Length: 221
Image (cartoon, rainbow, N blue to C red):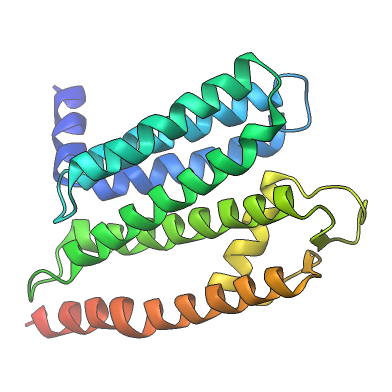
């Protein structure tokens, strides 16, 4: 019976499931990304998040077929990169994944703004949307790095390409406006993209999260 209740709760709060899957993925990747199976593990994590996110879009005003049309080619490219060494596919897969996460984030924002009530799932959706935006920009950073090597520097192995975890860390730091840490964009394109992410982060907190907080406080007796 407890398992059935857990399944029922996940159906009531799909945004919480999406947020949990993303957080678990971010915590697992650092253990494997520099190992021999790291490429496989990262592809598996990315595929799982893509699938879970696609299911979440079904509950939002977003069009499921659009998310599927973006996710399927991205998954195919990830599988090809996993089975065969094809580094030239990285920019294409990174671009598709970034587009997918931004579309999913937009769908969740529309979901949160669709009524005048702040439900528990919408509060989880606020966190999931923030994470989706961070993932989207992280894959844009990967795209820029693949197209223009040496775009990002860091205190450790400054000349080496930045890992997925490092770019994700940079993305979260910029989106939350807490700084850039030790990963620094060097080129004009990278800095322009970083500026856009900081702007998006500020506007998301000011326009979406603040509205949910206001609705939550208004609903209190």
